[in-house]
Image (cartoon, rainbow, N blue to C red; front, side, top):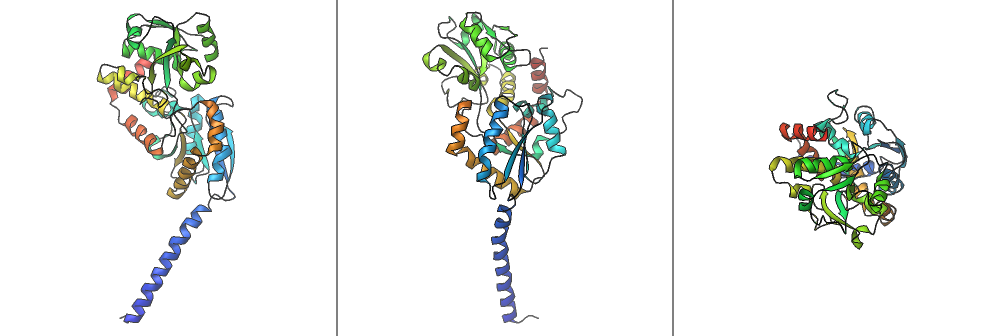
Length: 348
């Protein structure tokens, strides 16, 4: 049997050891990334907004991570980011040094299988991955000329309009078709323009009445059009109204039935979580915490914001919790809603 003095000494010693370990653990965790190299895997070829965003982040994130690790950006294109996501999930390091930047359509892929089909090529489970968030939102907007007789979204249902588009799989086509099928509009789509710049020129030449364009692309190309009244924005597509357009209704709000609202809400995830940043599964909690805190600090970094501002990413940071909520909602979406949305997106 221990004496009272011995028990006291053991208790004090154990407490001191516990305090010592408690103090050491954060220091050890904070020094984990020192001397390390972080690899940013980008799921598209070099060039464009989805390649630029991680490069801007790479220039600033390291200084907010204890240990100031080196960051290398590597492009891993293929199947709309499917190749990169499969690599990140199955083969990449699981210690926080591998970070993925997929196209936002990958958030929808496990549910809709628009890229992989039924082949099983999507070899990842989004619910097991850890999200850092996204630098901002990028809602798509349906717009017409300021002098157009189409003054409201209701006019798109009664009078219709001719919209320009870049191709069958582009959001400029997909959202116009979704609008026709789910919201009752009468939009005639003229596809085949090489890019946003081409159909904006077509609009200026009177060939088309408007288009559905992401807010960032529109503001980057013609930053004064909305403010000057050169064009009128009739609707926006995302899960919620953007801070930049608080008076413009979402497609979800304009839908009249429950299933249409659910389909538009599911598809709208890609515009709200526009630039998702994700880790592989099984990354230790402490590394996830450090990276999330560094990511959030970078979002508030004036130098980062100054470099990001020309991209016109709107709405502010989307938190990891929000992305996780989106993933959960997509996982739990009713099968009939998923099937109907897939059919609409495939033009059936």
